[in-house]
Amino acid sequence: MAKCIIIDDEELARVLLKTYVDKLDYLELVASFDNPLDAISTLESEPIDVVFLDIQMPDLKGTEFAKIIPAATKIIFTTAYSEYALQGYELNALDYLVKPITFERFLQAVAKVKAHSGTVVSPSKEGTITVKSGYDLHKLLLEDITHIESDSEYVLFHTTDKKIMSHQTLKSLEKSLDSSQFMRVHRSFIVNKAKVTGLKGRDLILTTITIPVSDSYYDLVKRELFES
Image (cartoon, rainbow, N blue to C red; front, side):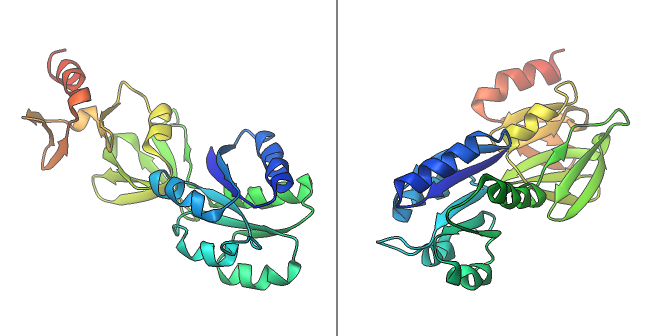
């Protein structure tokens, strides 16, 4: 599911976009703002996949605000002025919607969000998992994954011979992994249980790798990995 926010000084425009978002199960509306400056704290505090951003606003134009939006966050401009389209694409906007926005045109724009998002296909019966990184797909053997690390809006798959970065959250990923094979040990780490070789203080040892264990996970880690 892609997390999104709406920034538009017109209430009717915000309501319409919210209505469209609510119709789609792969979009989650985190917040809606009438001023771009009010959205800064949300963009800084959690990963946002897409911003529906108006251009003509009183305090700060959307084209100016776009320059401070994190690079990993996709921008879909929404405006009544088609002459801004070229400027929008120069700012690497994912799409440009001219008001009044129809649902059909909205769907075309969010289809691009799905195409650009980093998703993980559920592990297959063959013991593999497919990870999308940018435009590329990587099939990884589950047994080769040593641990998975959160890195801001991304997760980093560490295997025995490479690292693959994917745009998603560790929380959403955790739900798709088999808990008999993988375990959350820290807000930023999931480990492959079979790769754990020791526990030293509050650190898990994975042969030559050290992974911190959060206090909230310590008792569970000790019980499941060392006392069973």
